[in-house]
Length: 109
Image (cartoon, rainbow, N blue to C red; front, side, top):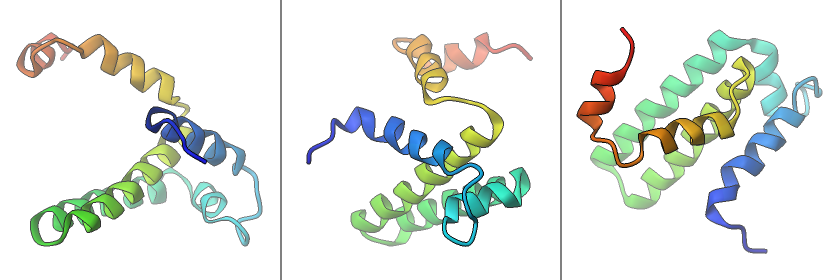
């Protein structure tokens, strides 16, 4: 089965949301949800650091693996706080074609 790469994160998000309320003894995702936002946030930070370490000292395959872990934990975080991938995609679309410097200047302080 081949998935359009653009849909993989949306499908994973749907799976993650479906794990809310599941048995934490049978689902790592459900276990993260029961541990709450502080633990989920900690995991996102850990995976971000591991991705950076892989980029600095390991192979492209390791960077890809750690990036997948980071995406997964970020999607769990989104689900926990009520952000959908569509909201993030819309924000990225608004920024398309805009200089990163100009985008930062346009943010409300």
